[in-house]
Image (tube, rainbow, N blue to C red; front, side, top):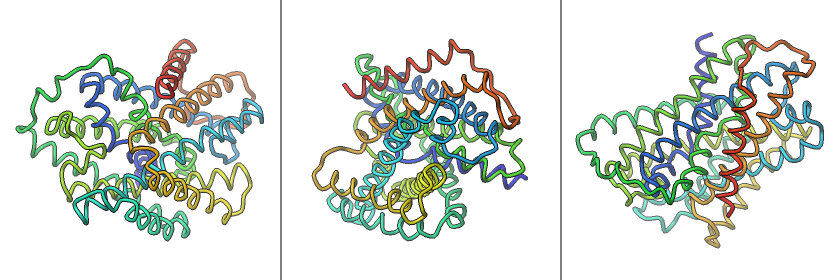
Length: 370
């Protein structure tokens, strides 16, 4: 039972901690640490409640779906298209960002520059492809290693560097750029796609879902805050877009491992969405979840259409905002719906609080797109 709980926690945490984690210090350096800290805590709380709401929705249904399937069952079939679009924006922006970030990190790791990031990203994808085509067993073995590595590395950096952190780098505040960190931080806390997978992992131990979601949602907050303090304490506004590159090759390697495990988690969730909710065959689902992201990555990188943090910002605000809104509406709907299963837990989120969350999501989307 303990191993099931740990795997479920690692499934959520491993999905959450990814490329967005590496982009947080850069965007926080624009607004200032105190504003960024407020966003990290606020978004962490919002996403914890959204994750718990989705967990309750999933446990209220005997059937196994991914988010489009659950939402459309309660809100109508037409919503399935909107949820699919929102999900795909999130999935593909994340997978593309991991390839961009992984390519730049690998290029820096082996050459000391970002000059060969397109080639390195392509090689990075080849390794992904070899593993994802094998399926879930290999994924389960690898994912917890990335979570553990980034957490331990962050703690070590924090302990070793605590006396070298410059408070002046953390006291800078620019209210005019208040919303700048929103999209990337929201992206960094997105893990809803892994919650249906947590139900599968827990199996008959689904009563552990609530505990796994709470722990799995809070671990990233601790890692992000500590990592941001260390990075900004050292480099302030001079931090790289991919923060781990600022610390040199060893830390860059752990950043690569983090993106690697997160890619596997999201790739699996996207593939299952196509197979479970849209009844696609494995090969078709695999092509859409693995080949298509690479094509987008290659075009974007070759033509220099978008930077790392820009991909994160758009993906986080648009996809995260839309998914959060639909999940909250669905959670409100199941209060009056006839359920085919009694959930192991219920989370009480007042309607007024849901409205506030939805307004925050909408404001973030408008800012990022305009």
